[in-house]
Amino acid sequence: MRDVSRWRRPERVYTDISSVCFNRGEHIISVRLDELHALDAMVDFVGADVTFVSFHAALNKRTFSTPYFTGATLAARKANRILVSDPSLSEDVLLAWFAGSRAISFDLISAFVAKLIALAGAPRVVFFGGSGGGFAALNLARLHPGSSVIVANPQTDILKFYPRWWSAYGRHSWGLSGDDSSIAVGLGTLVTHDLVGRYAVDSPDVNIVYLQNQNDLHHIEHHQKPFMDAVDPARMRLIVGDWGPGHARPPKEQLIAVVDEVLSRSRNS
Image (cartoon, rainbow, N blue to C red):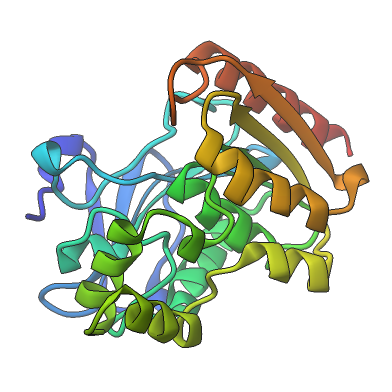
């Protein structure tokens, strides 16, 4: 279900990415591609010299509606803000990693984000995301040399996450069928799913702050450790904490402190 009104921000609607233009004040930009699909972002261009780009994690089915934005309070008034909603949510999935679908390709999502970053006009960019949003932040950051990225408990390979999540994504967003093995093969040819391999081969010009809950054994073994082995240690700072059982997030106060530090360092670099 689409419900922009719940965000209580004005919405500016466009029919294509090229027509999106600069406006001051916090508002929602929606590029309507058809009756079902839209590229949405809540933006606040304040004339800062650094831009903060945030991607959400999986949605809760009980509170599900589109678009969805997160991260607004982490960099309030300290940077230009771009909070992006995954367009694949309109395809009845709760998690799609901003990796694209049959209707909206990853290249189109990337072009939308790049357009908004250009409109913000800042020389430095900081990407942010947790869990599935962390995958998106790492994936988009590698396309923006010189950027920084902050991630918390991210997936670094979609197909090493729990199959129920990527299987639903493959079925609903890509029309794949069959058992999990068949869907994994299909996704392997359709999307960028392995950032461990991408970062190992491409060595992108990205500085990473990686927050990891020490009790999240799945993400440590299948995502954090392989990614750390693939990345230049000089480009990655690991922060490990005890934030609760399993996939618990870092406390908000700690996230704000890390974001403040990275924004300040980006300004001075």
